[in-house]
Length: 420
Image (cartoon, rainbow, N blue to C red; front, side, top):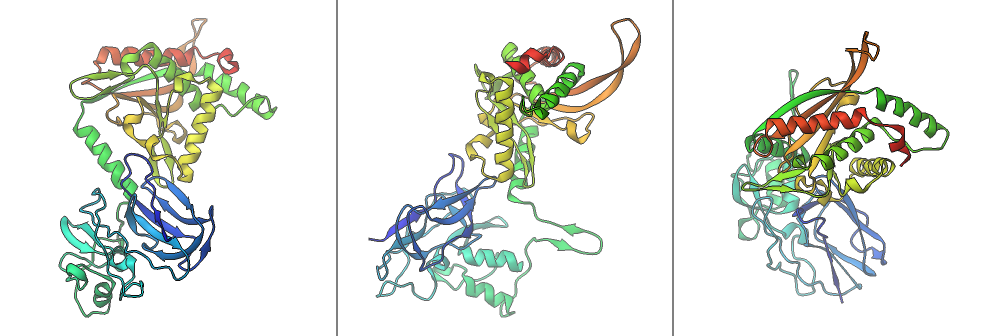
C-alpha cells in the first residue's frame, strides 16, 4: 500500500517550510533511513529520512516551493501501485493552515495534463491580494522571471495561475509588469529583503513601537577578566582548559547578577510582570543569514566551563543553520546579551526582544584614565556596558542598580570561578 511522506513540523511557531533539495527523484527505490529531501524554516535547515521502503512513486513539490507543515510531499509504494489524490494545499497569506480537497487522476491512476505539484493550489498574498490562486511551481517561475501576478488571468482549474500562464507572459503572449526584484543600475542596486531580514525588521520595529525603552551606559574595570583570559589561553595551549572567552565570562557575570537582582529577569506581559526563578539566557549570534538569538535554558545551573561549551554549541548550530526553531523564540529567553566588542563598537543601544524587559549590550574595551591604588593616575582598560530596559517593567533606579551589579561581578571575577 502506498504511504504518504509528510513534511514534519519543526517547533510550535513554524507554519511553513521551503523544500531546498530533493536527494531522490521520482522512480528511485528507497530504503528506510535514506535521505529524501532537505528543507528549511526562516532560520534553520533539516533533512528528512525515509521511514519506509519502496519506490518513490510521486513528488508533489519542487525545490524552492514553500509548503505548509504536515503537508503530504511525496508517496512511497510499489511499482504499478495506484496513487491516491494528493490533498490540495490551500492557504490564505503566509500563515494559514493547509486545507483538504482533491486533484483529478486519470483512469490508470496517473496525473492528468499537469503534475500533482503543478495542480496544487496556493492562495498567495501578492502585493496585498489575498485571493490570488497560483500553483507553487508557477509562483516560483514568476519570481525567477520577474513577472507580476496581480492582473494575470489563470487558465488552470477555478482560474488559478499555472506554469503555462507564466510561460505565456515570458513569451510575450500576455503582458505583465515586473515585480520587485534585484535591480542594478550604474548608480544603485535594489535588493529584496530576505525572509530572515523581514522577520528581524518586523520584530525590531514592533519592539520600539510597543515598549518604553531607555539605555544606561556604564564602564567596568576589565583588568581581572583580561588577566584571567591570558591564564586561560596558556592553560588551553597546554591542553589543560577549554576555550573560555571574554564573552563567556561576561555572560557568567550577567547570570550571577540576574540571580542577585531578579527584577531584571522578567517578562512584561501587559497587566503583570512575570518574574522567572531560572535564567534562560539569549545570546545574540551573527551569521551569514542574519542575526539570530538562541536561548540557553537554565543557564544558571552551569559552571563557567559548561556555559562556555553550551554557548559555543548554540553559536555553531546557528551558523550551520540547524538550530531548533523553538530556541529562537523571544519569549523562550528571560534576558539577552548582545556583544559587539569584537567589532570595536564603543557604545550602542541594543533593542529589547519583547516580552523580555531588558537586554545588555557589550562594547569594546577602551583605556581610560583612573586613580590607581597608590593615589596616582594611570590608564585602565574599561569594558563598556549598555543596558536597555523597558521602563514599563523597570524604573531607572532598579535598572541602574542591576547594571552596577553586572559591573561588580565582572570586576570581582577571579581564578577560582574558572576552576569550579
